[in-house]
Amino acid sequence: MPDQHANATPAASALPVDDARLDAAWARIRGRLREEVGEAEYRTWLRQLTLAGVEGEEAVVQVPTRFLRDWLRGQYGDRLRALWQAEAVGVRRVDIRVAPQAAPREATGAVDGAGLAEPLPATRPPGEAAQTGARAESPKVESRGDWAAPLDPRFTFDSFIVGKPNEFAHACARRVAEKPNSPGFNPLFLYGGVGLGKTHLMHAIAWAIRAPQEGIAGRSVAYMSAEKFMYRFIAALRSQSTMEFKESLRSVDVLMIDDLQFLIGKDNTQEEFFHTFNALVDQGKQIVVSSDKPPSDLAGLEDRLRTRLGCGMVADIHATTYELRISILESKANTAQVDVPARVLEFLAHKITSNVRELEGALNRLIAHANLFGRPVTLESCQEVLHDILRAHDRRVTIEEIQKRVAEHYNIRLTDMSSARRARNVARPRQVAMYLSKQLTSRSLPEIGRRFGNRDHTTVMHAVSRVAELMQGDAGFAEDVELLRRMLET
Image (cartoon, rainbow, N blue to C red; front, side):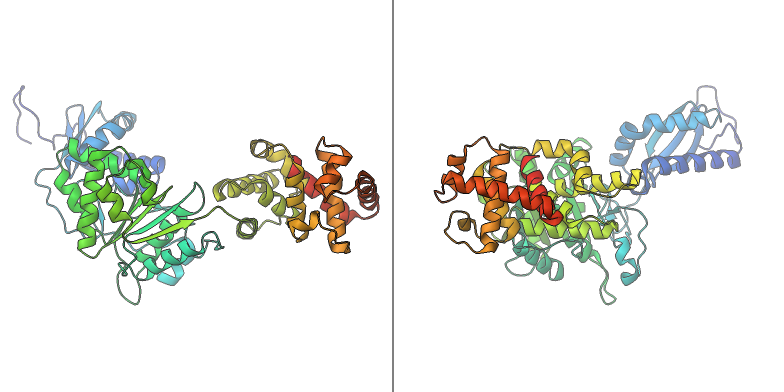
């Protein structure tokens, strides 16, 4: 190695230790980073790090773009320095630099935030790997580049439970997945409340589109939240790489933006999304967007953007029905291979009606508790384990609510509660509803009687005593009434 002047900057190859020892230290550092951040995060941000050498007490690592350099300095600079110091090879500082003459590669797969591309394997969810010949390398798979969000392998069309509230949105999503850019379906705009399945459908579309079919490579997909779109756009502005950002986005076959309502009030980001939208549609590329409201109700979006979003297919996802919630819970329990009594599933489906996400979370907690403590899942354990969730759904019990729940449970019409019909399949549920009204409300017997077709208070008294008598002699009937009571009072 040539001599250096005292004040000259040493070359990047001037190492304080032999190359073999330094390479081994760098390999261990990369291994620790991979373990700490996970495979997906490592592949996104850290895989392109290369060791240039050591200059005195400073290790020099290189990346291909300024965007990646700035991001890594802020997010991983301190950790890299700590790992180098732990290796005890004389390194006290780490400098992250842009590699000289880093030539862009063809955009054939994933694209990083500055527009450089690299091939991306056509990975499928673990359960479908055998069908496509692909191998799932991590729990979540990058959809396209470091600015795109990972796809969840649980969210496929096979795992989506279809019912009346979501059947139209599901059919539209299937159509787009099978034939992107179909007339009338570009863009596809999905909207609905929180936790009803919008994100599940978007992931399912992405998985289906990315899958190779009959020897044809899968299409490239960029899926991200509107918030992430904005942050990446701002980062591109700051790093003066907006052209690369635009080219990266516009090179994809399908662009998917989740929670578009986040762009309300973000005028500059709306402008960029509008131009990206037009560029992709003009090229015959597919756009899929989700929001909590339809385009016409998104006050704060530019009129031209709102108009373009509404010119394709707009599909809403309604609140779940009792039948759909039961189907979702049964599917979840079967997947977990845990025996959950039907009465527990019915109880949860009645009590947690706000969204699917909370419903599945409650069942997951119940199953985890049963597995950890080796106890069976019961109504009692359900009430104990989920007391906080159930309390959040508490409301004052009314006679109308009791009548509705009992009618649903026994599959009779609500009007039968106040009708003159005396058939046993109607009279018995009516008596149960009277019994529960006496137990769970502060209403007097005459008041209860009036709510049941202006019946006399003695009729209510007879119903209460008769139900109590039947509960003592019939365990199955007692369980039915107990289930209804729990659903109403907790």
